[in-house]
Image (cartoon, rainbow, N blue to C red; front, top):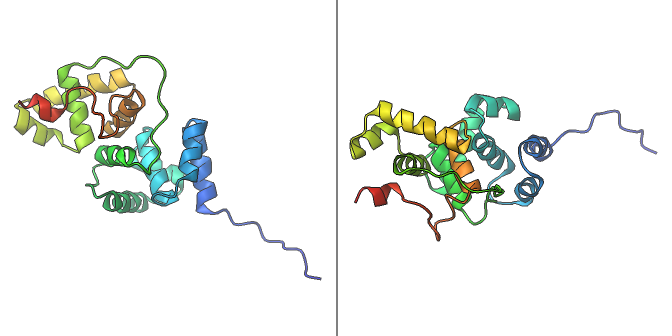
Length: 189
């Protein structure tokens, strides 16, 4: 008869990341992410943590990894999603992919965004930096920053990636087959 094991069970990354996500997400979204086989658990967790408002450093700390490791997870996810690694774009690409669980919709009406706020939200979702947007639209970067602050306040978001998530939750950024609201491309006309 073998002796009983005295070693502590090893926690798998899936279980550890599951606990991290359970604290950050509504139950249905959490379960959908846990059931998903698209991307691996590290990549799904990294994307989700930055989408819910974590900075890269706090997401890395929450996952118990180095910031460079988190950046590697995001780079691998961006490569698999065939998009640039700009975090707000990565969040939008993940939610746009049919195999990545979309965030839980929020109840109540969506905030009303003016044309400038739509422009900035679209830039975040498209991964466009303010310097590029400034050149393309003729806005001073400081003006774009002020518009961004207004956008984040209306969406109750902490970062551009979080604003993209909140816009998805309000139905402002649905999947590619049903665009809502003016886009940066439409405003260029």
